[in-house]
Image (tube, rainbow, N blue to C red; front, side, top):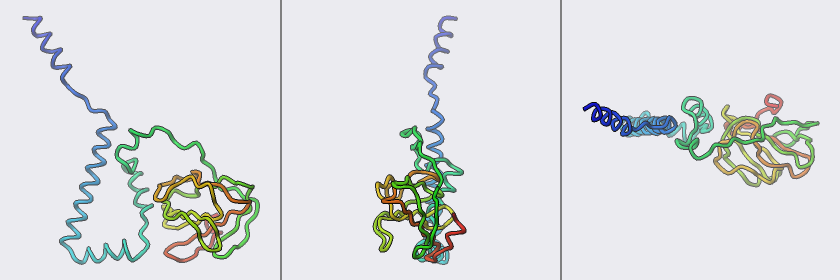
Length: 197
């Protein structure tokens, strides 16, 4: 009799399954995203005033997806539900801009840097453009969490992809020579670079 009770207890212990913490957290993130998406779809379908306002803010004005992504990461962690499960490494490169001289160049500033300078990202944000800009050459545009679009021009050996979320200090690429051009814009308006350097 005692043997049967011990046997039954050991069976109960072995059949209970405990979910790993990362799985539960990831599942919670997925559920939160689903609930928010459903709420937005219901609101868009049922309220024409909200629909008009939503389309105006997202499509007609400069909507900052980088800010939304930053808020999501602050409160829920990774923007991808299972990112921590697949990726355990962090970038090694984490620097700040360093330059010896500044001068006005077109809409922004020309920084004199070392030859083949490793260009760090100034502030966390979303890569929204990689390509040629007339008068600037190869350019990367980051939509920063503060709503400012920062152009990094005269950059090659690009180490980021379009729509990557890049952290502050992360490597973007290297300069072609000893010049790095920066342009700060918000809602299409050029900003004074001195306020951001």
